[in-house]
Image (cartoon, rainbow, N blue to C red; front, side):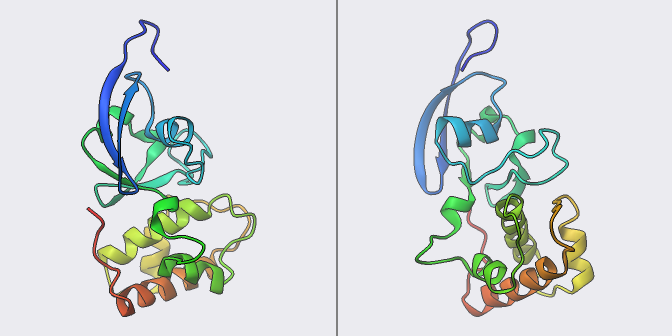
Amino acid sequence: MSDSTGQKIEITVTVNGELHGLSVAPNTLLVTLLREHLGLTGTHVGCDTSQCGACTTHLDGAAVKSCSVLAVQADDCEVLTIEGLGSIENLHPMQAAFRDCHALQCGFCTPGMIMQAVDIAQQSSNLDAQAIRQGLEGNLCRCTGYQNIVEAVAEGASMMVATNTLAREA
């Protein structure tokens, strides 16, 4: 992929613990790099305007909407996607909480919700329903009434404390 001038920029980014050297157009979005260049399709494109949060990933340990970050801004950074958070065999506590609390329906928003929820839990270990709802304001779900999501975030945060997984990735 290149811009109208054909210009490409060399970047190095660590994604889910794996170092990648890539050549990208200056206008390539991080979500595009993840999905199209690296084949990590767990990060979803919902709105392309940073309104829905389906594309939420972690950049140097903090949640970001990857549709609003240029790939070149991730040069020499650490990116964590839903694929790197846990696995089917070894779910991250937040992933397990979303499953156990039935906090998903169609699942489209779930990866972004989980990535945002992990960030919320890492910012504060004392979360009530209001704090969780406020922390999730930038992540939209069209299927649920959010109650199960709020319960999952609370349970996941408690599980993160119990399993000592609160430390930021970066």
